[in-house]
Amino acid sequence: MGLTIEYIDGQTPLSEEEKEGLLIPSITTRKELDEFEQLNIEKAIQWTFGKKLKAEELFSEKFIKALHKRMYGEVWKWAGNFRKSEKNIGVKSYLIPTQLKQLLDDALFWAQNKTYEPEELAIRFKHRLVSIHCFANGNGRHSRLMADLIMEKLHHRKVFSWGSANLEKATEVRSNYIQAVKKADNQDIQPLIAFANS
Image (cartoon, rainbow, N blue to C red; front, top):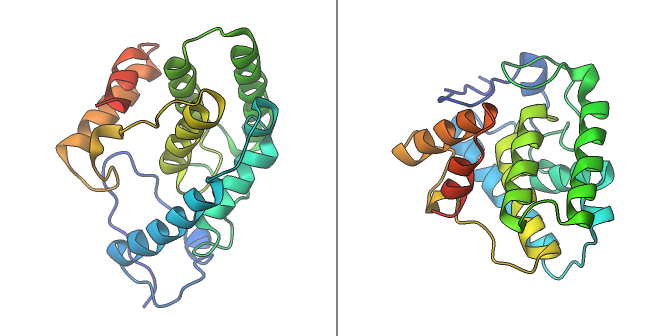
């Protein structure tokens, strides 16, 4: 039967080859997939508990990949590996390593030089990370968790509320989130910062 996914606004479709990377053959619907992914993500969040992370560790390709693998490695064979296909968002797949390196270098500079307030640094990083779109799936959730880790591990602040709703479902809150991301695409970062704290 295979996996059938109905995509909502802002979600990136998987290629047939990427769908073949599903490690749990009994999953056939978006609802089942969301449930298994959420369980895996909760384990990844537990993995971060008690971890002391310096900026140099957090802003590294190694950590970016390791976190994604922790979030999705029980569901997808390709978790933690950069995508090889082109998507409706993101840079060309061959540009991912260099674009990510530029972002990580920028973020380290921002952190070391206090270029931005903590919230703005975290949201600017999240926005650029999701714009690169490193992975075949899960980029939004991965980038939000990275922003939360920047707040918690580097700045010892509380994590963002992200509208206090499940952003993986077609709701008004998700629509507001997508609008804020689009404004950030046009260099207006404040609505995304405000949304993250709403």
